[in-house]
Amino acid sequence: MKNPVRIPENDLLWIDLQWFAAEDEGRTEDPTEYKLRKAREEGRVAKSQELNGALVLLIPALVLVALAPGMMNTCTEMIRFFLLRSTTTEINDPVLVQAFLRYFIKLVLPIAASAVLAGLASNLVQNGGFIFSVKPIAINMGKISPNFPKYFKRVLFSSEGLFNLAKSLIKVGVIAFVAYLTIRGEVPRLVSMLSTSLWQAIVFVASLAARIILVSAIIFIAISVPDYVFQRRQFIESLKMTRQEIKEEYKQMEGDPLVKSRLRQRMRELLSQNMMVNVPKADVVITNPTHFAVAMQWDRSTMRAPMLTAKGADLQAQRIKQLARENDVPIVENKPLARALYAEVEIGDMIPDEYYQALAVILAKVYALDSRKQRMLKEL
Image 1 (cartoon, rainbow, N blue to C red):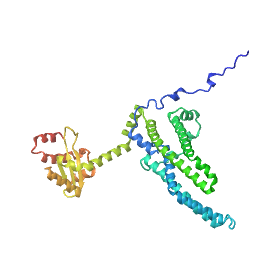
Image 2 (cartoon, rainbow, N blue to C red):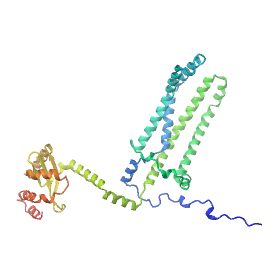
Image 3 (spheres, rainbow, N blue to C red):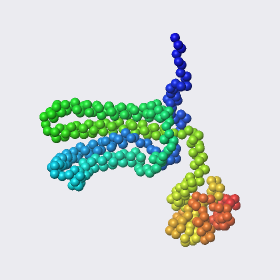
Image 4 (tube, helix red, strand yellow):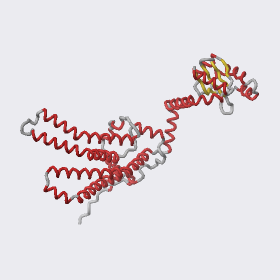
């Protein structure tokens, strides 16, 4: 007896056991707000296609049921119109073409429009508004080249693939079960249709089909709720990060001039909104005296230098001076210094060194009767 032929192990069909391991191994941290925002800008959001499909099925079904009597009358009118002209008019006659288009629009447009609106509404709700991004439709050559191991892993051995398979089987089962129950209860009437007119039989079968579609769509809506929860969870899982990625992202954001600029701009906006609250806490308000006013505060225990806490021109300047008077904050007139600080220093920024001498003269007047603040002035 000849020895059996042995096939080398490397040539055997093998399955990587890592396919069954955690798909996001090492990604233990929830995605940051920055990563979620970037994903949204790229058109990636948590979305349930099952919910889209269920609504696109349910809404047109409801419209069909609501408009069924009128649509049946339209069908009757259309059949009568074409039968009366079938022997006297050429098939390419403009009158027939126009009539066909008119009847087609009356029958199809309500259903098609309701389906489109249902799909748009579902996407808007799930997306949280409009998202404009060309990245999802951009050509990616890496996706064109076949990668069968990765494909089989995603389709057969991932939780997403198994869940999608289960959903498909459930949908087929639901439609079959609903059709079975609906038709089983109408078997006697179906048999009686053999002795009725063709039109009555068509109407009855159409009503059965509408009932099956409507009930199936309602069940699909119920099924799509846990599917959306699952898709949301999968979306968050796909964006999870390692601790190292979070550190790198933080470093990148800290070092990104654009991000820093936006953060500074946002801080200035917040300070501008709240600057009137800071006027009563100021040590002095320096004025133009009519067009500009700037408020300055200095606390050596918390500040490395005097800080500009509020500034304004015209009406805002008058408001700053009014608040200063109401709260006994000293007001000092110095036109060059007020103009320079208003033009060059932002709210929340420290006073530049070149203005220390002029500021020291003003503070000397303000702190003349306060020995504690005189010591602070000497350290300026």
